[in-house]
Length: 276
Ligand SMILES: [Zn+2]
Image 1 (tube, helix red, strand yellow):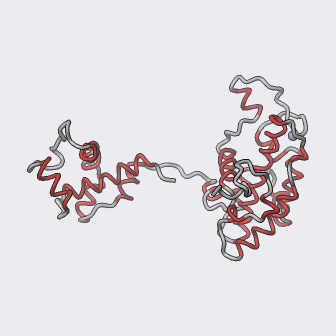
Image 2 (cartoon, protein in one colour):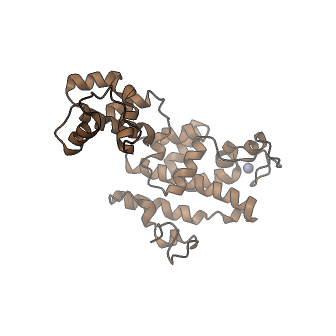
Image 3 (cartoon, helix red, strand yellow):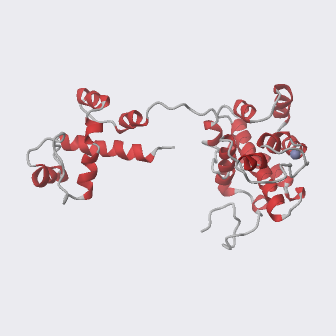
């Protein structure tokens, strides 16, 4: 994921570099002739009537031209947008769950909910209480105290689901490695093998399905039976076959038996695929 503000600034730096180097291009000659008139880039201040692109190029000139990488570019004789972007972005800690989300073959809605879960921001009842929103605080599946770890991994309802969708090796590792949760998911979905890609897809799909069922019970008076376990049982072997055949965009081509979740957008097709 790219930080667009910093990337735009780094990209504008390339235009500034070309202007400063007086490269033999028509737009550069034009700006030098009509605006700058012999002034160098660091001293030039665009007039108020200048076009927005000229103002944008010179808006961050001090920050860009006085940066440490600008001197490196000078000695190297060329500008590098990526290096400038890295400098502007600064050093940031990497999140451990990055590879569970990126490159995940699940549908965007599955990975989005999984991402929110990793951030710890799914609005469970304990979290809503912390915001001052009163509720009974009880798990909709079993009636004990509700928090995110309980709903997705420790509730009997969730454990039953995970037991159905994980394969024998994964279940063994769960039993021997202790607590199911983010740490377990990260350590058991490392790698680029077909098995890991399948595991990532199943994790995202399962988290989405449990959370959707949780919400359906609260907001639409469904029962626990709303969860269609059959769907996951079909997805697991099917996506394995598809990944083996070299197709990564699994979410787009779900088989009809799995896709039949209704047709909310009335496009005559299944809602897994984008509307035409
Ligand atoms: Zn529960």
